[in-house]
Length: 390
Image (cartoon, rainbow, N blue to C red):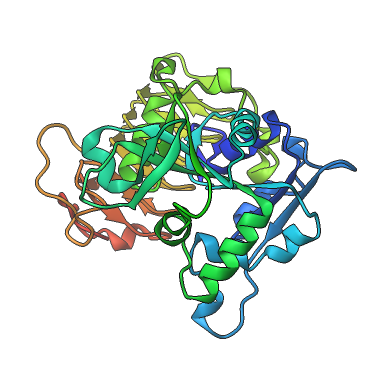
């Protein structure tokens, strides 16, 4: 998943590992893993290719049953214990791949060792109104976790689980074998709460920028945060690494700006050509913005084309989207309702257009609109009102 122009979301976790001196990594993939596998390659982009390093992609072994997919975070680790057994580590770091943050895991390891913990959980304070979205924990003394509640309306704490776990190896193996054999497959919902009182579980407090980008709103907001280093998301300072081989990015020329172009508070990647106006937006490599076109408060992914006179406001465009001449996506002012089919996903005014879709010239799409992938001009016989799906 692209983020912040030339980067992918997985780059943040991979960069954290590299900068923490961790070079033996297994990546557990699941649904449609090809793009992720191609991006990771042999790990060379993160110094994980060589005699002293090892990056292994671990897709699920699928048969004819849906149960062959990983059934939870703990189940994914359980099914790959052989990978760990071959290395016999002292400690195992288990990470999520859809978070934007900059963290030194070796500092977390220092605390883990000092407390002689079986499990150390990275944690961060979140606004109380957001606690229902996360697992939260209550701590005592030197940070020992005494209560762990997974995504509950009971606001027992605002200390949220970041999905970063550091296990003593033997404890991890015993816990996932026990729980998964009993049909309990998730770390947050099953394994961690059951460990309390039986094993040493400690919280490691993190005080920097962290965002779970598992929703459209959070993904869009995090990209907007990347435009302002004062938010704590500073791509330059974090020195994020990526693999530029994909989609020929390594061959892209520098950004081209036309005589009448205007770019304000935006991230514009290599290979972009801007003849119009771009404000408060993120442009991935290869994006073209035509003369008189306007892009505002939007995330535009690789190789999209915004033709002359078109407008894109508060939108996310997947790769290879073409917005025809004079077409409009998004709108000023009040929004007339959430998305009809997915009100919990699209209600804040963001419109989303799927990969490879072509919006015909002069067509208008409102706010909270969801457009599928690979659609042609014939799929848009008329304008699209707020909240509709195509």
